[in-house]
Image (cartoon, rainbow, N blue to C red; front, side):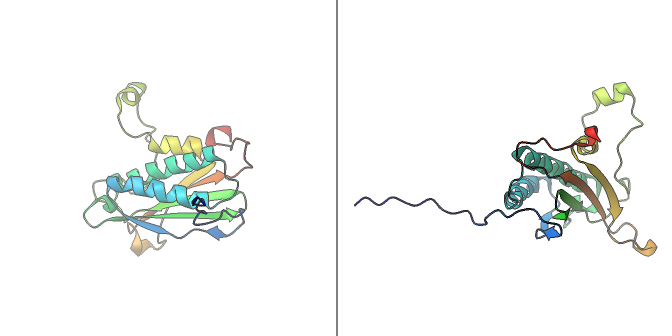
Length: 180
């Protein structure tokens, strides 16, 4: 009798979306090398959501990668010992919310994430950087940033950049920021 290995069951069986769902927070060293691990972990977490459109999952992963890179580049997260926290939740049954929290403002970087609208057409054409937030604005249903702690004496302790995505049934294209 031949021995045939049985296929392994996934570690976590996907479950339907529901309001109030939260995945465990994940903490990463603030080094751009860690972006691959962030993407891998996020794909695994998104796999736990039943019926999630694969295109939407890759969109969320792309936005998370951009947010992570910004946190490493523009905050204390990118300095020695810095960290970045990634959260994932569903505030409503059909809304997925991704957040990336940095370690706080550096003195040589802007305190609040913002799209650099003040560039000329020529500056945009020659620019090698600065398009990540534009990408997020176009791909997410909505996005923004807020201070981690909302007390005046705690300013600069960290910024949470968040993006929301509309979760739709498989086969239906998700709405993006451009379609709002």
